[in-house]
Length: 147
Image (cartoon, rainbow, N blue to C red; front, side, top):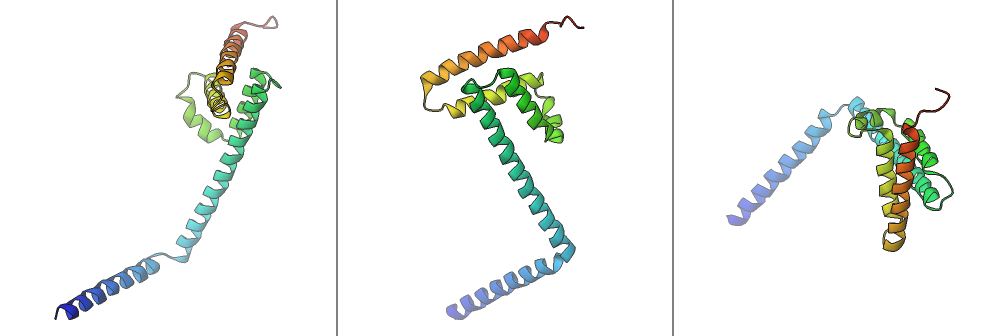
């Protein structure tokens, strides 16, 4: 009797699972599946764009570390990359006092990642970054003679 009871319970559970699967299948219309497919494709497209943006930021950080461009040029590049994501950036703007501060923090993170495991080099580059950032801030506060 115990074996028959187990068989009945297993058959009942399998029947419920089968009914559930078919019920879910019937609950989704072809338009739901198409909408979901488009949503997945959009998420994949956004992920690829985000990966390209991250790579571009890493490249810009590497260029600054190698002293092939100025901090102002690097931040300008970050600003251009932000232009590709206006809705995302608009939401984040309230968290930072300025775009410069946000770009400085992003560059700081990329510098830390690029020089991970090289503490002496990282310390020197961070000192240069802080100095360059202070100079950039000071130069942007000064009124120009053409104003």
